[in-house]
Length: 367
Image 1: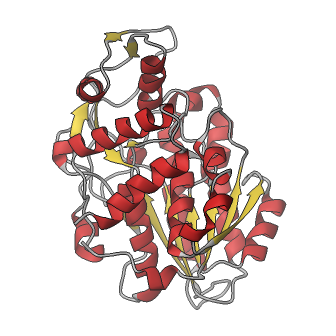
Image 2 (image 1 turned 60 degrees about the horizontal axis):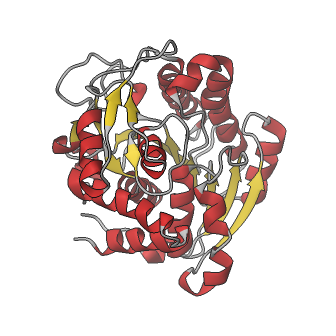
């Protein structure tokens, strides 16, 4: 597998949106470990506990293990003026755009906010980057749910049709189209164009790992039930998803940014990051595997608020294997074991930083 180059990231100015979320917190930690100067823009965390606040209270006490620095700013990507002002101040070499409204069920309740955040917010970022006068690699994070889901067994490729039944999926598919249009219109050497921006989208989903406390996500729901000795309630136990540890796609995002920045031949387009097909398991199998490491019980449940969700989803990742020499490191069993052990360690009063660094260093050292 192509290794991430520490020398590339040292002192690189990285703009990271959505850093107070689950994936964003892990990526911030990794960038600091690599020695980057990280400029962060996000909403306040919306739940307690949350990984970001757990990490930042301990990072200053452990500066010896981090070479990088970060600048924390709370703001809304839909506030165009403030967001663009921050982009100009950050003057990034690399951008990771993770800020989003990421929940399917919430998108039914707040469709306009979902569309505004996921589409217009992404365009606000690209508009702000127009003023850069130096090369910048831009990785726009979407989701594996951008594809028109046909409920078929084989994986979706990057050139398969986009779509989306629910507002979240459709808004992310629309973001892919908007980003592609923006890149075609404003990247290059023509009128109103810039040749400094190298923009790609990254499609991944169903990431799991320690530190996710979000509402309406399977792992946090299971952990909360286990901590309170209550049965785990499953809405759709038969639904299959490509489960992967959060560090897997993050390693792909880092590698994609590196290669986009340094290799003129890499296509600036969409890339899938997913696990091996053997990690495509049902929600029931996921939960029963968790119970191997932390015993519990589950029950199927339906509510009046059940919305449409795809039953089957898988990604093809041949493209990133070819262009980035990227492949997942951890199988399904290892992913579940590490995820459960993170929460067990945290509930035994180990700090979130200690738990995360254990997994991060293990991942970096994995062959």
